[in-house]
Image (cartoon, rainbow, N blue to C red):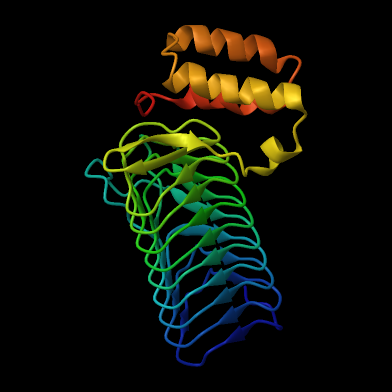
Length: 262
């Protein structure tokens, strides 16, 4: 179904079964396949291909030559019904690729709201990208990567499969990340190592002195004092009852499987 307010270039191909919402704009030479849903106000620039069971939310801007919903590169994939789900108000740069999920994983690759993905970004199968995240040019996320809200990943970075980037994590340009990066941690290098605490994160700037001290103490325990990780987890869990901001650490520890950068 195509809304009567959608604008589609005459040389683009919209397959029967695709859904285009109100005021969607499709540029020249695009291909939109049958099971794609694009919600109101989203703009797809020229030469883009949207395939598979892909749902793109409202007011997204997708650059030219993007490929979204294509078959993933997991050798176990056998054509199962999997999907890509993209939220609202995202900017996705030209030449970006976002692959559908796998049955062995989450069955869906998911991108939240208000994200900015620059040119040539690759989002692999089963990735979960949160909200208000920035990913620089020519950066690739391998399969099953999780990126927490407000994280920043620089240009020309490579993120290993199954890695977890915590909320407000900051990854410098040209970094290779092969282990998990906790919330509020700055990391750089290949392989990436911790380079300090993200003291410019808004929750930290707005925190009271007591909470600031706790956050800095968690960083010190993880990377300077070498406190056993199970002890850190227990302490954070105890403190989070009084400081809800620390709950993002509990979620990070729950998801982390590759070990923490050091």
